[in-house]
Amino acid sequence: MKNSRLLTTALVLGLSVALFVAPACAWEFEMDGTYTWLYEYRTQMGKEGFFGTFDQAQADGVTAAGIGTFAPYNFYLGGFHKGSAVSATGTNPGSLTVWSAAYGGQGTSLAGGESIVSGSDASWNIFWMSTNMQVRMNKAVRVRGNYFIGSWNSPSYSTSSGLMVSSGALNQDNPGVQRSFSPGYWRTLWLSAQLPWGEIAIGKRPSSWGMGLSYNGADNRSSDSLALSAPYGPFRVQLSFYPSRRGSFSDDYANTSVWYNERPDKNNTRVFDMTIPNITYRSGPVDAGVIVTWVFRHRGREGVIVPPATRAANLQYSTDFGQYYGGAYFKYNNGRFFLNAEYNFDRQQENRNYYPASTPITHTPIYTVHDSGAVELGALYGPAKITAIGAWYTGDDYRGSTLYGTNRMLKVTSGLQSDVYSNTGVFRPYSYLMVYGYGLGTSFARDTGNGFVQDATFYGARLDYAAAANLNLFGSFAWAERFSNSGFMWGCLRPVVGTTPTANTGGPYTVTTTAPGIGGYSPAAAATQPYAGQVGLFNNANSGANLTPTIPDGALGYEIDAGFDWKLLEGLTARCTAGYWLPGNWWSYACADKSVPNWGSYTLNAGGGWGTIPGKTIDPVFGLEFKLEGDF
Image (cartoon, rainbow, N blue to C red; front, side, top):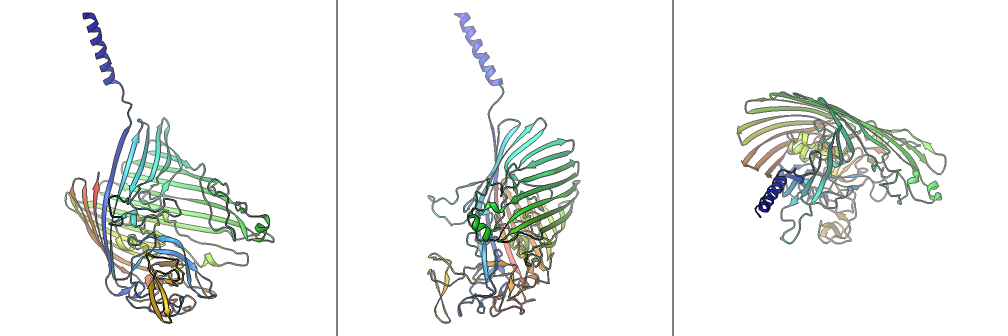
């Protein structure tokens, strides 16, 4: 019996030891994130607004007589819809048509695109939470992702847009504890595995590289490529490619509307999309890299489902598209002095062969050339840090992009970036209003509503001073000028007029006429003119038989900011920025003025300012941003 007890005791102890010393096989879960509460206020410091003196307007020259006054809408918050010109002949000669979804401003409703308010100031209060999560299966394999709680519309690429900047939820927009304000969204999700010879990464993840002038994963840019990377001493070499990727061209065929399945159809897929090389070097104070991506795709007229007779009778074409883009960067930081420099390029060529009912036509290739660069340097001295930056982004030549010959020849000599390349984070420390708030007039990321820099030369400086261990004070100065004087035409920014609204019972209200010269506000379906406070960015517009001229003065203005970052508690920080911006003379050419008779029509104002008053006074803009951030 005694032996049995001893045997049982030894067995229990042995199993216990084996249990406690056995290797752990459980997954590891990590999470961090930030809850953000934000209040913003902006105002025009006077009555001279972007679109003329407040509460004054003439008939627009496009809508029915007597209702073309836009007086109730005054302070412009930034943001726009992209549009194009209607034919110079017809019912509303020289009028404009909006065709895109809304592009930014922080105060712009991205759902409806209203970016003008009736008074001289505006404010909004939003909140959101961004959470980074990681599941580690073992020491070699892990899955990471970002889960966002805010307010969004449909998450599909073509329609996704937050109701406000950063998809934040508007305060009291969905009252009641039984009503959901957000379903939550996974914005990124990817897997990485450490192999004996390197690392593999798959899934949607941030695409960050260099300073972030083009590869700005912290702002917006992502990659879904299959990436293979391997270290070699201080070097890291990476190859990434897309086994299959949608790359469809839009609006390539006339008078057709039925397509093959665009995603798996090889006519729409990027036949070749590879990044090689992507080499970085990191050793001591030096960080440098070079990257090039190569893209080729073909789209044939066979990509449309139509009867052979229809195909023969309509103007269609096949397209071969080639592109290579990339850049190089260099960073140096010895703890006291730092230097960041980056150069990026983009070269595109699009060859189109037209197939009308007669002989096929081969036309001049479409070329797109984009270059950008920046140098940022700074130094630390005791509790102070001073930083300065200079940057440039090439611009467009819209005149060359609209000169069609008998063979529909088209050539673009320079181009602008897509909004997914937005560089907000690089310039936000220097410019709260001119860049971040107003996008220099023409550049907003549709996904976030934040402005960024393109077609501009930008200079900025900033001083940070650590007044205490938990308090940083800062001040900054920024100046910008349009890089290209042939990229945007006179009157390219103007309130939207000339469209017919659908039935609307909940606003925005529309203007109707009950008698000649008498206007009334009504949500009726028969309304003839919406005044919802929308602004259009129009380009490539004709004024009669001629192109509207481009803006000769590139001055975008200067800005002075000040603020603080105050760590109130561990995990709780208050941030505040106040900005003063004086718009430059470019805006007087770009913004139509409501005091000009027939300001809404290009044809009626051809040769007479095109609805603008060049050199007019635009009062300064003041803005205030206050944030509370809870980090965990």
